[in-house]
Amino acid sequence: MSNPIIKHKFTADPTVLVHQQSVYLYTGHDDPPEGIDDYVMNDWCCFSSTDMVNWHEHPTPLRATDFTWASGDAYASKVIERNGKFYWYAAVTHAAITGKAIAVAVSDNPEGPFTDARGSALIDLDMLPGVNDEMTNLDPSVLIDDDGQAYIFWGKGTCYFARLSHDMISIDSDIYKLNLPYFSEGAHIHKRNGTYYLCYGFGEPEKVAYAISRNINGLWQFKGILNEVAGNCETNRPAIVTFKEADYFFYHNGALPGGGSHRRAVCVDRLFYNDDGTIRRIIMTSEGVSAV
Image (cartoon, rainbow, N blue to C red; front, side, top):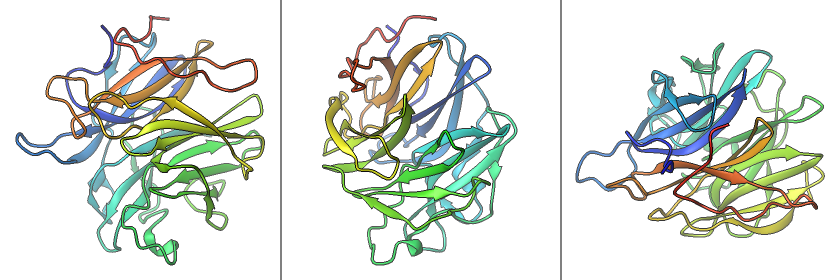
């Protein structure tokens, strides 16, 4: 049985990219002490595979406190490549400004190490006037569109998005809100054949739902549930990637021994599109995927 795909430690909140015929999987790392049932996440992990089955772990590429302005907490993240550099967008707790914030780190290599790209938060609560929820700035997801313009999506309870500057480390627009049914957290944006797909954690406990649009600015059409509640876990965060002409859906559950909502485990199953561009419901399996 291949799911969960990482079995020797608790991992969560996957993000994935393909580089030079390898898949790079970046995850959060649930590490609560024995007897503590809460989120304790200090660093992120990096794994790579050439066949989707055998995963090699790299040294710890990034810690929350590598951002000197942050007090800790390694929440969900997104890694993306541009012009030979790799940018890591992550939610952390700000040390000086109330609430969570979005950080960005950079590396010349997909396995890191990564360093703070700007020395300050890319997005903090002060940039959202009138918003008092300290958890708002969670779970960034980034897309570089066909014309080179980059966008960032994020949020908790409300989904926000903005344009990124070409340097990938600053915001280049107003911050906009999206109205998505039962948006909880865990946004993931990707594009296929001219259609934008925005997946997200839906309700509580979280299923994964998705919406589509032909324009990054909307209107977004809600398309329903993509993935049911993942076993023994209150949250979910999807990641979708195409590798060697097949599509894959990464997520997390609480399936490892001793696992649960605060000791999660990353899994992967196949993803299939219908002829009209919609996505078939994900079938979560214990077997996982076959080697490619």
